[in-house]
Length: 409
Image 1 (spheres, rainbow, N blue to C red):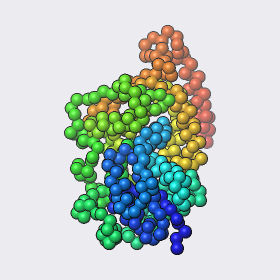
Image 2 (image 1 turned 135 degrees about the vertical axis):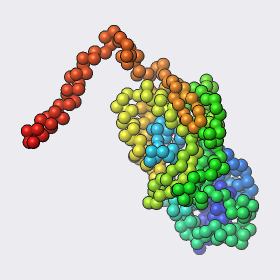
Image 3 (image 1 turned 30 degrees about the vertical axis):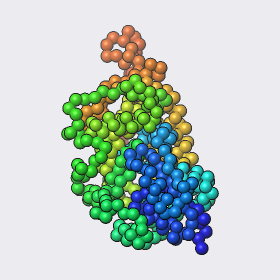
Image 4 (image 1 turned 180 degrees about the horizontal axis):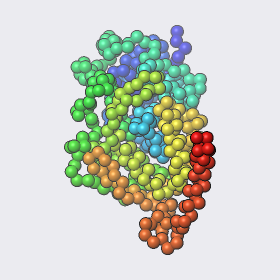
C-alpha cells in the first residue's frame, strides 16, 4: 500500500504527462491533482481539463492557472536586471520558468492537502534538478515522485504501448512519429532539442523555427523602437505604458518579425553531459541589449563592473536550479539596489536579426557629462595634466619589477 494519499502533478495534457497521470493512479493508488501553468506558451490549455476529467480527476482538483504576469514580473524581469546569460549565449528561457512552476505546485499541495508532488522531467535533464530543488526549498518534507526515475517506460514505443493499453488518447501527430523535436515554450522563449538536432554538425531546418523569420526573409526596412525603463524594468514601448507580460509579448512580436533572437547552442548540462539545443528568444534579446544601453549612462563604472563579475555566478545559480537559494536572493538584493538609478529611455533599430542601439538618455540619473566628455574645448572642466600623475602611480609597481629584472639580468 502506498504511503502517498494525494499528489500534485505538473500536467500539460500531452502524451508523457497523460501517461504519468494514469501511472500514478495505478502505481501509487493515490488521488491526483493536476496543475497546468499558462506561461504564455501559446497553446490552448483547456483540453488538459477535458483529459484530466476523463481520467476521473475531480473538477476541484484540476488547476489551470494564468501565471504570465507573475512569470515576467517576478522571474524574468529580476533575471534581466542582472543581464543574465549562461555560458555567454543562453538567455535561460526554460530555467527561469521552473521555480515558478515549483512554487505554484507547492501552494496547490498545501491548499489541497497533498503530501506529494510529481513532474515529467527525465533523469537525464536539468529540469528534474530545478523542480526538486524548488520543492524542497519551499516545503522541505514534501515527497517527490519522478516517474522517469522509477518506471521502465524508457522509450517512445513503450509509452505508446502503455497509452494504448490504458485508453489514453494518442493524437495523430504521435501516431505518425510525433514532432521531430522536444520543445518547451513560454513568454520568454521556445526551445528545440532531440532527433535531428542530436547531431551537432547538422544545421537546423528552416521549417523548425516558429517564432522568428530568417534574417534573410526579414523586412528590408529597419524599424525603430523606443523603450522606457523604470528601476531597471521596461514599463513602456513607443510611449505606451504596458504590463510586464504585455511588454514581453510585444517585443517577441517585433523581434520575430525582424528575425531576432535565434540561437544554436551546445550547452553543458547540470548532470555532466553536453546537449545541443536551438532557441528563439526575440523579446529577451531586445530587452538585454536595451537594458545594457540604459545602464551605460546610469550606473557608476565600478558598480557596472561588479554586476558583470556577479552575472556568471547568478546565471549558473538559475541554470542549476538555485532560484530559491539564499545566495541567489542575496545577489538579487544587490542587483535590485543598483537598479534604483536605472531610469530613462533607449532607442533601438531592429533590422534583419540585429538589435542596434541608436540612442539612450536619462533625465534624472544620467552620469554622462558632455562638458567633460567632449573632444572640443571643455573650458577647464577637465584638467588633462592630472592624468600624468594617475598613470605614473598605476605604473609604479611595474616600473619597480622592471628595474629589478634589469638588475638581475
